[in-house]
Image 1 (cartoon, one colour):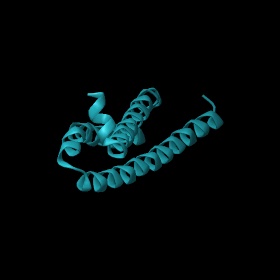
Image 2 (spheres, one colour; image 1 turned 45 degrees about the vertical axis):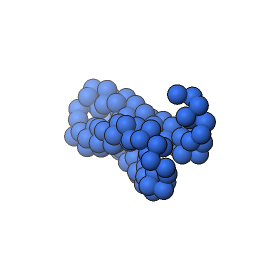
Image 3 (spheres, helix red, strand yellow; image 1 turned 120 degrees about the horizontal axis):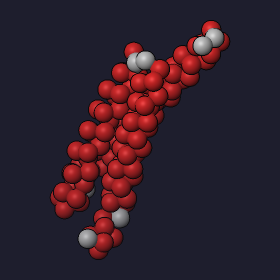
Length: 113
């Protein structure tokens, strides 16, 4: 592989890591906001959301670990790991969106169940 290809590959990894950390920071900010709102919600709504938040914490931790591993991974390894990072961050965002929907319309959520 030529030197320019190696530089491009390393740059792509650095960009991915930077963007992933930024996305993870955004997830943490949204999670903090949702947690504040959960504290003000009725007990029934808090119970509906509690399982969702446990999964979100796990997904955030998973993404953090995968990002740290990518920094020192071989080329073939980091390419596979980036899919897991994207998946974990995407699932966490989806869970936070579900929590927000429940908080925005708790009566509708109760009707869905």
